[in-house]
Length: 207
Image 1: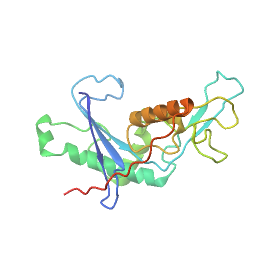
Image 2: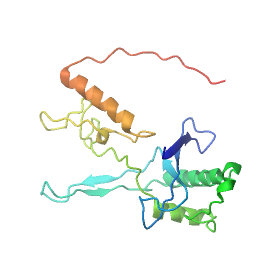
Image 3: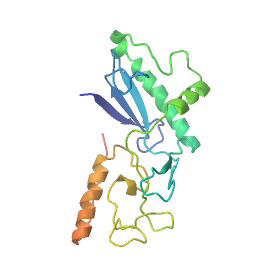
């Protein structure tokens, strides 16, 4: 198994996780990524509910031209603070007694980087998407939405979109299960199968 992951709350008052911590038993070399050459491990911090929003625009009238994509990373200030808290937690994990025998040396951002300003600078330089881009064909009734509640493209006949691009907001986790759900629902709507009745799930409390 290459990865182990956990969903955590970086603040005690949060009601749901805001960060995913991904542990990778492989060294991430800047010059050879994604090929893990040598011994080491990596911890990646993923912001689950970013407030930042990007844009996708047409580059030209040429249908084969690549679109202009601006992810808008950290355009919302709360996202930076979330990642900063997550980065500090990731560091705490590596300092646990169970990691002592590996005698690991932090490569990025490096043990000399400790103050918040320098850590934020590193976050802005190193940040990237986590292979789960979505929302470029957002579902909704407003003028900026691309598809309606039945996944039909506004203003276009006989065309639907059924993938992660229809998410109105980023889901708080890996996107695979949500995309499968959208595909199943799209198939039912195209075939005219009615939605199943709602089920009331009883609330449970942990001990």
